[in-house]
Image 1 (cartoon, rainbow, N blue to C red):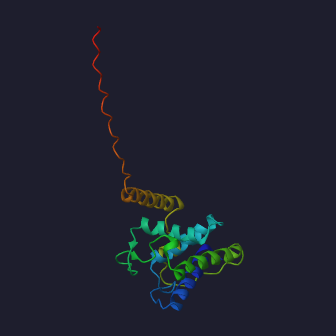
Image 2 (image 1 turned 45 degrees about the horizontal axis):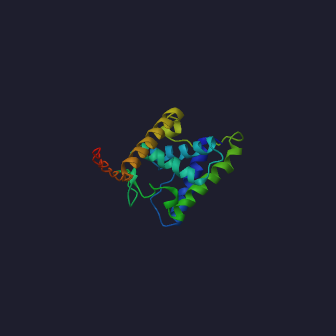
Image 3 (image 1 turned 90 degrees about the horizontal axis):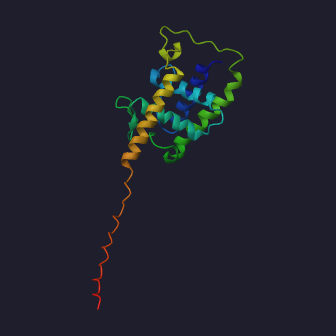
Length: 184
């Protein structure tokens, strides 16, 4: 089993979970656009490189990737506008959405022992996508994009943060000098 196979399993499980919740927007792996496949591969890579990371970190990594790619919050998922309702911190997600991250993480960790075993052949297909050919961002490029997105988010947070109000110190009036008494 290869990293791409694990990404496919995770994607299909996510699509099945979405379907069970009435969300029919998730295509099968074969019909998924490259950006969606690359997102699944990045998620698998994240868990392989950070085996102790909790599900919330999985979401934060996904969020950073999306922000680096220009996505923003939207009430409904719209790939053309790059809007997604899950573009919020993990603890603000509905439980149904949080479950995706728990399931994704568990699937990766359950399938990792099989990576060095039997290799599952890729199905024959006329045209392979860039994600399937391995034409994705390098780890360094991915980290640079994530770093840039995090720096941008920090800068936005600093701009939005209320400035502490500093009360001007009251100046003390200079002490009045008492007139010197004339020597008698």
